[in-house]
Image (tube, helix red, strand yellow):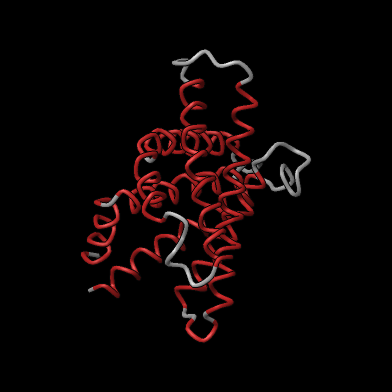
Length: 214
């Protein structure tokens, strides 16, 4: 019990750990909401509210992510340290998408809380969702490219990383407006399951990485 508590506290102490833990709570609540939708509608509604509130809290915390993303992008530059130009181009494209995504999400947040008077809020929300999908897609392609070049060096952590990025892409597409690929076709239960599994893998990645570094 003491070790488990220590690991959870370790997650909370770091921004990335806290975010993935909040994601796990958010998606778990959504999973329960989907499962209880017909069995216990009142409980399902309460869990959906919890999921929504935690998701909103994560969005608020992401308002301070702009500067770290810009710093990483500047340090990455044109990807001169990458093994080939294709990987470098994918890295530059991924960074460009992330740099654009956060200001757009900030505008959506300000509009939602009526700080800014933004016309066509739905359009901004749609653009934000598109950039979220592009980010997940480029991360997946970039990871697959790296894996193809290091097939003899792949380990369990690499497999977990690929699985998580794939789940994130499935989840990102599913919340786009209806009509795009499988968007709108997954139930709340399925979305919660995908999100919970992704967050669980994220927690595993952090804990495993810390264990290796000790």
